[in-house]
Amino acid sequence: YAVRITFDDLHDTGIYSWNYLYLLGVEYKKRWREYLDGLAAHGVSREP
Image 1: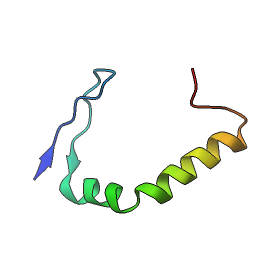
Image 2: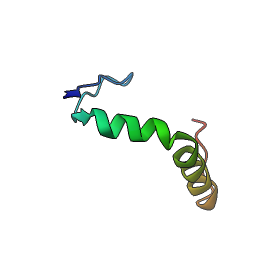
Image 3: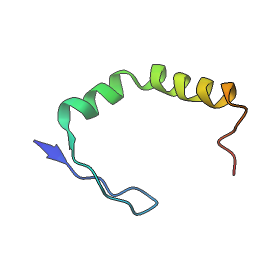
Image 4: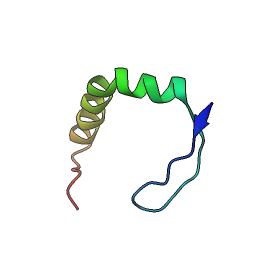
């Protein structure tokens, strides 16, 4: 009914339902654009 993901920074908190993971996939482009726009609005970058 859900999966537990271990991220590349080794945190593994949270349980994600299949419905939520599916929604992330469906809305990927929209969410990514909003994320990048938010960074730009605050004058920051993803670059370290």
